[in-house]
Amino acid sequence: MSSQVLRNVRPYGEEAADIVIEDGLIVAISQPGSGVGDVVFECAELIALPGFVDLHTHLREPGREDAETILTGAQSAALGGFTCVHAMANTSPVADTAGVVEQVWRRGKETGLVNVRPVGAVTVGLDGTQLAELGAMAHSAANVRVFSDDGKCVHDPLLMRRALEYVKAFDGVVAQHAQDPRLTIDAQMNEGLLSGQLGLAGWPAVAEESIIARDVLLADHVGSRLHVCHLSTAGSVDVIRWAKARGINVTAEVAPHHLLLTEELVASYDPIYKVNPPLRRIEDVVALREAVADGTIDIIATDHAPHPHEDKDCEWAAAAMGMLGLETAFSIALLTLVEPGMLTWRELADRMSIAPAKIGRVLDQGRDLKVGEPANITVVNPRLRTVVEPANMASKSRNTPYAGMDLPGQVTHVFYAGKCTVRDGVLA
Image: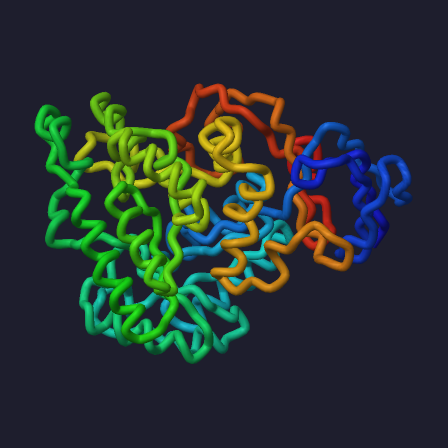
C-alpha cells in the first residue's frame, strides 16, 4: 500500500501537523509540510479525530433489505465519519446464532468500508423467554462481545440476571433496551400535557427509568457489565449517575436526536418524528447534554433506524418507529455539544470513538492518534455547513428528521485501516 500524508491537519483541533499513513498504520506525526508520501491530502484548518465507532446501528440485513443493506449502511457510516459500526440483532432471521452473526460479519468485511461488528441477541428470536447462543456467538469468527434484544426489552428479571452472569465468561456486555412493556402498551409519544392535548397514548418516563434502576442493581449483584441503550429522560440520567457513584459497572448512550429534538415536533403528526424511545421535553434534552458533558453518559450512538417510504408515509399510529442517524451524527454533536463549549474536540473523540470501542471491546478502533496505531482516522471541517437533503444520502431509506436543516460541520476524509474511504466528502 502506498504511503499517504494528511498535510497541515490539526489532531483534536490542536497544533497543525503532518500525519503519515503506511501499511494501515500511522507511521509518523511531524511538523507541517515535512511529511513525505505518495499521496498527499491537503488538510489545512481541518481537524483529525479517531474514526468514529457506533455501538448502535440497524443495518436491516438479513431480511429487510428494502430498508437498508449492509453495503448501503456501510456507505452511510463511512460518509458519517465512522470506521466501525455495531449491527443490531433485530433482523430476519434474528442474529441469535453463530451462523447469522458470522454472515453479517462476512458481509461487512466484503464492503471494505467499515468494521461491521454484529450484536448478538440476548434471547432466542428476541422473544424474551430463552437465552440465545451467547457463548457460541462470542466464540464464532464474528467474536461478538455486545448482546442486545434492542427494539425489545429483556423484561424478565431472572433472564436478565442469567444473561449478565453468562457474558462475564468472555468479557461481554448486555445492552438493554430499557422499556417496560406493560407501562408502554399502545404508547405513541412522551407522556405529558402535550400527549393529552394531541390525543396520543402517553409513553411515561418511568417505563425507561424503572428498568434501568432494576438492571443496574442486577449488574451490581452479579458483578457484570451493563450498557443502557438510548437514554432519553432526566430521570434516567439520575439513575445512571447514582449507579456510577456506587461503583456499578454501567455505561450509557444517547442518540443524536435526543440531544436536539423535543416532543413539540409531534404536534405536526408527522411520523418522521416517531421514534423509540420517544422525543422528550426540553428539560430532558438539557439534562442529556449535561450528562454527556460530565461523562455520566459515556457515548453518543446513532440508533440509525432506516425504514422504507411506505412504513413512514402513513398515519401516525401505523408508522414505524425510528430515524436515520449515521450521516448526521457528527453535525448534531457539533451543534449541541462542541459549538456551545460543552465538549472539547478530545472529549468528542472520546464519546464518539474511544469510549464506544472500549465498551464493545474493539481492539483496533478508538485508538489515539499517535505513531504505531491503526490508521482509522476521520477528518472534519467544522466551518462548512450542509443543508440536509434526504435524496443525497447513501442510505436506502430517507427517514431523516433533519431534512432541510442547515447543519454545521462536514466529514471530509475518512481512513479505514489506512484506506481512504471518503475523500472531499464523497465516497472514494
